[in-house]
Image (cartoon, rainbow, N blue to C red; front, side, top):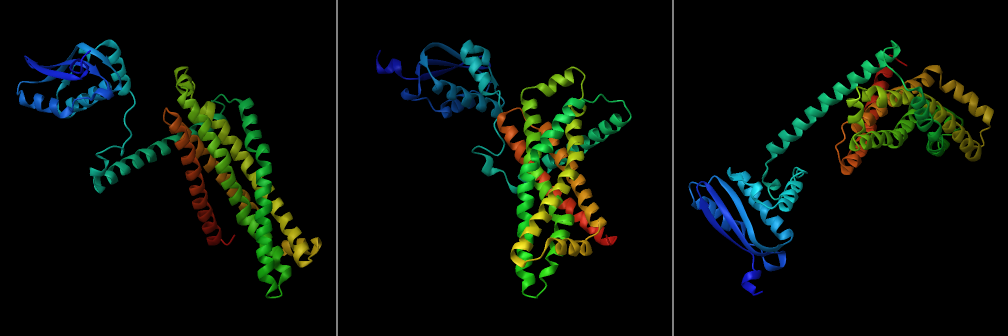
Amino acid sequence: MDSQAQKALFTPELTGDRLVLHLSGVWKLGNGIPDIKDIEKSATAETGCKSLSFDTSKVNGWDSGLMTFLIKVLRFCQANGYRFDQDSLPEDLSRLLTLSQAVPEKEDIGGDSGQRNFFYRFGQKSLRNYEELIASISFVGECFQSVVGLFKGRKPFRWRDFFLVMQEVGADALPIVALISFLVGLIISFLGAVVLQRFGADVYVSYLVAYGMLREMGALMTGIIIAGRTGAAFAAQIGSMKVTEEIDALKTLGISPVDFIVLPRMLALFIMMPLLAVYADIIGILSGMLISKGMLGIAFPIFLSGMKEAVALPDFFLGVIKGTVFGVIVAVSGCLKGMRCGNSADAVGLATTSAVVTGITFIIIANAIIDWIAAVYGI
């Protein structure tokens, strides 16, 4: 076969309002693929042209080079209002072309992304944030309705799943919560000992440890740990169900995904989170006692008596309330991001990351609001 027969060529022919592209030769990347600009000139030169079709009877071979050429022609037709006659292509080529268009191109990726000005990007981002806000409010409303329906006895509840989730978010989280709480209590007592020694107020280190752990660090650090551990797990589990169409199957069977999936997880974390916060308080105070004994020589009875003077029951209950609120935040953010997940593996990763970031952000905001309310009412 000579070089002319090997070369990829096309010949345009106007038939009525249709521009037929007669393809010939071997359409492979190594032979060189004709420029799309030649087709643009041919189509625009024929004023009566309304559609493009193909004749591939003389094509002797092809690879991805032909697919690239067809995709460029398709985009040219879409951009200029020409009808792309895909039925004129062989069946295998038509299927591949349909498959290439099945997954839309990601936004802000491509040659024209840099041409979009600030106002366009700002508008698109604002619309997406508005949609996310509406979806979040709707999801919280569905969760509230599900809880109310459960207490009224109108909603079925899978107690088996509930106790399993309680174990996962509670008992299985004890080691990491104990480790972080021990280190936080150790750091607080160590810094307090170093500073208070300068003023001869070593005995007051118990004030600092107890007050800091009960009111702030115990619940806050536990909330951050659970957001990174359990919130991410919720988002990944529900996101995987979304990808495998399990959630769609539940809807088809008339089962509410919120009742079946979200409610057990939310109630389990609502119950276990304050208990984990109390557990973190105990571990943190014990580590503070060890440092006080080792560095300052403060006996345990003296540490405990000083702690009783510094803190009271309202300080303890404030930490428990924070833990409860943080549990609701982590559960809602993790389940919401999972339910809003896309239908790809990449979307599951993005949902997991978003759940952790959202959970930690709202935990910090909620902590500041609760502290402000406590300061206003003198708690």
